[in-house]
Each structure stands twice: as structure tokens, then as C-alpha cells.
Image 1 (cartoon, rainbow, N blue to C red):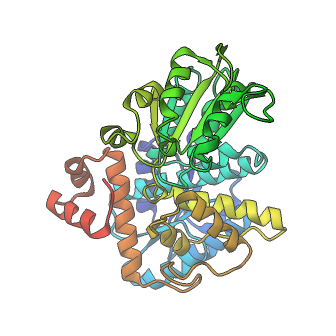
Image 2: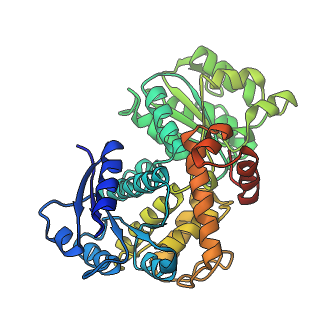
Length: 434
């Protein structure tokens, strides 16, 4: 069913034109001449588009009444040039966005699309609150192209028996992706055995991975290694780039033969397992300098998945922040925190060197009412200048246009109605990743 948009505008011609535009975009629109009539309607909108200045109940009052009735309903305001200060005040009161007259029809539709997408994402968070024990779900939230691609990749690779290499910066959630692959596979009922290659001393590596038999060394008893423990399920080799060079050929042989020889014995034990390796660096350059065996890499890389860093996920950053803040608030018995427009913009501008791990820690501090780190752009509640807000808005619209055009700057420039050189200048100025 198409989303329902309530259009509240006292100018009849303008109202009808807005409804026609919205209907042509595939949504369902209902028009109202005043705010009280919209609130009295039996239908419940997915988004409200309202003029700010109207006789009787104005847009600000409608915003407050609509959010009191449905706190999750996005409200977009249409303002005149002289109403910008009031529009900014409305944004602080919870408005989704505002459009200044005269506005572009395609831009209006992109604002509506973004508002509806944000509402859907918040609804997804609500559903996930009931399933917080499933660690992989929280980490794979998001509406961006990068997250959609990642979920599609997991859905395609998960049901196969291919070994997989997952690459991504520290804190991006590679382990969550590995767990999601395991859960999506026919081996989901089997064990998921994790080995941190960076934390395991080289002297113990062979024993832990391959196991040993009684008498292999003084005091030794029969003990299966991680390869055997994962048989029937999945073995996850975390930070495999740190695996000692002496162990790599032995692991390669075990994976090629799908059999393991325990330390101290002379016969092979069959293995039935899938291997998922994670690395915070691209393994290909390591194969060139000899620090990682090329034949082991190609044995492991039956399929490859790259997990994008948090800083390129756009509005998903605020979504994940809200998710973890809500979880922390529920865990500590705090009131559910509100993530306003200004904070969302600051979150999206942050570089996030620690990725999701850093975001989660900050969200928990925010839920407890503690100060955010000093490197955030401004203290919570401090208003940003209009120029900064306009720049953030422009950067966001350019990012969305580039995403819709799949990085084609020529098409994006045409969609935005600007010269390609101008667009490239703005991309460089705002540090937008194409």
C-alpha cells in the first residue's frame, strides 16, 4: 500500500498542485485547507507536509499536535523567505525538514522520500528492540546503499558452502557479518567456533588449531583442536592477517584435504566445516610481499565481502546511534533519548575512526545523560548557524543524488540542476565520498 501524505495548505491551487505532484510520484495524498481538519481526519498519515503560515492553526501548532498524537510521524514545513527563523525553531521542536519557497518539485519529493525512509528505519529499530539478544541484527541495520548491498551479499553467499574472506576496518562489525553468514547457512545448527589469530601466542597456535593426542608432549591428554571443534559448523578466523607464517602452510593443507592431523599422531581426521576469515587490511598486498601466502588466500577467498566504514553510511549513522542509545536506555532504566536534527547532522559529519564500536560507546554515554566527547562539533542543545545548517543540507542532498545516480557525477549534476564543475567543487569542499 502506498504511503499516505497529508498536505495542509490554505491556498487551494497550491494544495491541489502539491497533491498532484505527490500522487504522480506514487504516493497517496490527502489535502486539507487547515490544520484542525487534518487532525480531525480518520486517516493516519505516514508524513505531513504543511505550510508554516496559515490562518487559525499554523504549521508550528500543527507540528506540536501531530507529534503529540504520533511522535514518529515526520512533519515537513513549507516556509517563506521571512520565516527561516521560525522554521529553525520548528526543526528544534522535531520537524523533519523544511522547504523554502520557491522550491523545486524534485527536491520536495526527495525530502518526502527521506522522511518516509527515516520513519521506516525507526520502525525497524522498534521491532529489533524485542530481539536484542540477536547480536547480528543490530549491526546490520540501515537503509543506505552500502548496507543494502551488504545484506544482499550475505543473503546470496550465506546459503552456500563457500569459504569467505571479510575485510573491513576495526570496529565495522566483521564478526557480526560472519555470524549472519553462519545463521544463513545450512550449518546454522552446528557450532560457530571463533579463533582470534592476533591474540593467540605463536607457541600455542599449532596446538590450539590442530589439537594433540595423549603423550604428544609431557602431560598431554587427548584434545581436539579448533578445526575439529568446528566440524559440522563454521570456523571463524578473526584477524587472519596476524596468523604466523609457519602455521599458514599447515592450515592450507588441512583446508585442501578437509582433514586434520593432531600433534603426535600419524593419521588424518576428516573435517566437515566452513571457514570464514576476517581481516582489517586487504590481504592481496600482503600476498605480494610474502607476509601472507597467496595460495592460502585464494583457498579462503571462495567469496569476498567488504564491510564499509561507518563514516560513509550517511543517515544510517544516526539510525545506529539511536538504536544503541535506546538499547542502553532500556538496559539502565532511563527515559528513551531523543536524537534531534542538529545532533543527527553532527553525527554524520564525525569521522568515526573507531566505527560502530566507537558509536556504540558514545550512544551509551548519551543515553545515560553524560557529555559527548569534546571532538563533537558543538555541545548538545547549542544552535548551529544558518550557514552551517544550509551547508549540511546541501551536502546531504548531493550525497543522496550521487547515491541515486550510483556515483555518476554528470547525471547527478543534471538532477541537481547545476554544472558538473560546480558539483565537483562542492564534492571536494564537503569531503563527500563518491
